[in-house]
Amino acid sequence: MTLQIVFNDFIDLIFPRCCEGCEKPLIGNEETICTVCRISLPRLNSEGMNKDTLQYKFVNVPEIISTHSFLLFTKKSKVQKLLHVLKYRGNKEVGILMGFMFGQEMLAAGELPNAELIISVPLHRKKKKNRGYNQSDLLAEGFSSATGIPWSGTALERVKYTETQTGKSKTERRENVRGVFEVREKSLPESVIIMDDVLTTGATLEECVETLKTAGCTQFYILTIALAQH
Ligand SMILES: [Zn+2]
Image: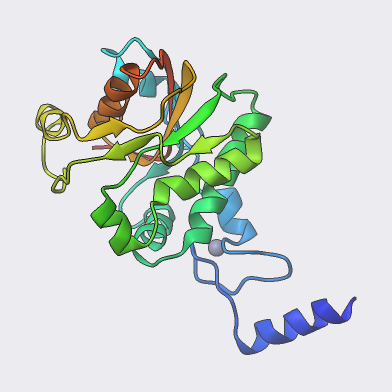
């Protein structure tokens, strides 16, 4: 055992670092999320949720080749807690780690999209300034470092501020987000991944696709960290 490890164990005793999912103290080399949580977070398939049902989300958008969500979002779950920590408690590591785990698992399953660039769904600059970062950028960064697919947080800009989508129907949400994005990069590849945190109705993601189509993108893969049933 090196002196550094002894020292780290000593620090952990005095200031225990806790798992962001279950709040138990982290042990050994564990970082941010403990091993038990990492293994037991509800993957879509293991919860009896057929991944194919996701494809029906975007049945009217033929340019979307496939849709994948990493985890199932339910109220009062660890997934909700982790996303809360990421969005409202300033913990950027949680985002990078969840994106990394998602990338690792898609790679291991041989399901990695054949895309040249990951584009994160942008926040309006006011919201980004308040939060200090865009959580989808962190997810894209983590996914990118696991898979080697480059990412961009500046390909799209959210030019209109929209109020919360909660409580609105898909048609209302679709209207609410019309024209909120603009393309900010001159040349984009044909095949891209769009990365977001939670998939609900998919209205925002559809608007991203519509906007990116005007910049020459033709094939889209939708990836989100969590799927909310609604
Ligand atoms: Zn835990």
